[in-house]
Length: 195
Image 1: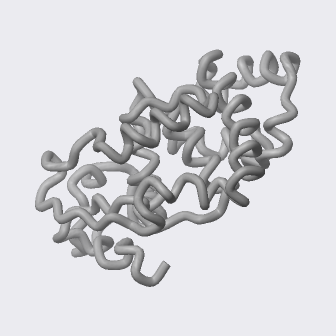
Image 2: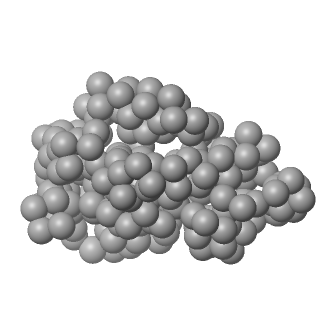
């Protein structure tokens, strides 16, 4: 990617998928339950791995998990889980695959209670994007009191693979927090004001 735009330093030197993800998705407020489920799954899958690994497998995840159709994934049985664990297009970790199925079921429960997963999950930032003012990426925390609260409540509701660091990465990805550095050209568009 050769242009003169200033970006968050984590994207520099990355491949085209990194640039595309940073420029078109990361930090934009997400309010669609299917897409929120996708990000929740991908952030959990990333634990212990590089984000590049997950981006490279993203299409594989979409195919393997019925494009993150929450109701379909919630119905997966042991045979389907065994099939997924033999799929080289995703991270074949039993705990992570099981967590995806469990989390789909728990999202359905939160939808019943709150009307949508979106209504539930965005309460942790008061329903709006929290715009941080980081000058350099090294200032960005790996978790916050908000992600601690989210993790604790999700665990209480039966969600799996949802520690505070995963929750904070999820919040960054879905625009609940704007962690683009202030000099990044994506900072203003991801402020949530036009979302």
